[in-house]
Image 1 (tube, helix red, strand yellow):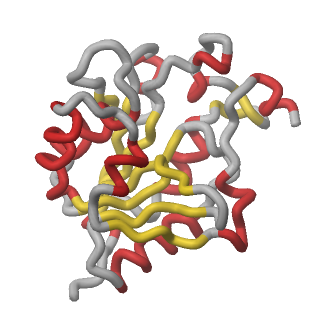
Image 2 (image 1 turned 60 degrees about the vertical axis):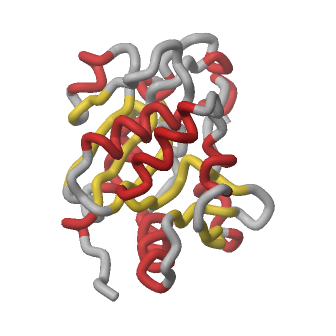
Length: 192
């Protein structure tokens, strides 16, 4: 089996949501420790992905300063799967690394472990698991799942976790460093 390298991976940072728990503020552009939240995910992908995409549906010009922005083809903020579908269509690499914009503690250990699991298994998706919960927005997926995902969306389903579970997937254990999977969902999270 061929070892996955940086040239095989496109990274997608998900920043396209409504941020309803952030009182409508664009989560990826909110500042934590002096930097916009999105920069944390972008920084950990620099050494592990050939290409970078940002899934955003508003504040496009602001996000363009960080990288190439893609927008959903589906209307009405249909969730992260819409952004993932667009990235799978846009990407030219065999793998898509998915990270959310709201996990500022994330580090390269996460990416290295996901890639290692994909290298060692024949699964189509490797997804982070903290020992209790699956973190569906932290995953490495094969690009050839594009049509599979389009069929799922065409059926009216929108849950990322459900789509992952209907495929050949592996939960990658991060229980030893679960704190890096903490996501920021409210303005109070930025202050803690």
